[in-house]
Length: 129
Image (cartoon, rainbow, N blue to C red; front, side):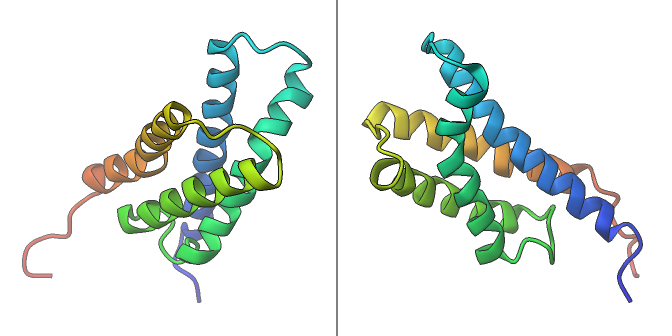
């Protein structure tokens, strides 16, 4: 039997992670005044990172503890590394050092940061239980 609310937490975690990766791409495209179709341009840039995010979830087995900081760290590392490798070698995108630094920081804050806040705000068990 599954814990009550587990499916809800799983859906929330997946949604926040996906939204974080999409936000990273949308903000980056806006800051660089990239032309072209908003939808196709965004999909082209976000695809390697969404694929890597899915891989990160598998590697971390994120469905077991989707809101745990440790899960977020694994998801972040896999998303960042695999996303950059896919972007460079499969999607023919740039991986300049400044892009890697910004991507590292943004995704760290977004994929791990919300989990840190969730753990920090979670009710603590009563002493002696």
